[in-house]
Image (cartoon, rainbow, N blue to C red; front, side):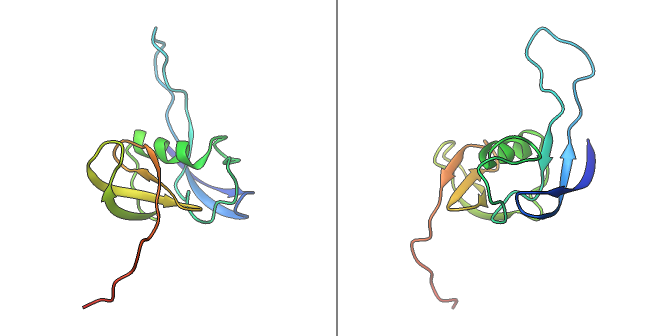
Length: 118
């Protein structure tokens, strides 16, 4: 994998991306091609489609999970995933969306209430 810092037109700033390695050999099954993975998907994203990776935020978080990349720099919270039913870090990104850091499944999130610190 190769790390780069590139300009993102959707959030109007430079962001950190990783370009994954393509498979080294041909296979009969469908193999992943090299992909652009934005490491800063989140609330600063302004569109439904990432101009760098040509996918939506749900798919970008799934790429992060699929490639085992660290969640450093992303907004996360511990919650029970509605798909895999495990307590995990949920990656938060624009307008109430989240994705499970273990299975990559997208979900909606909302804050019911806040409690004062004791």
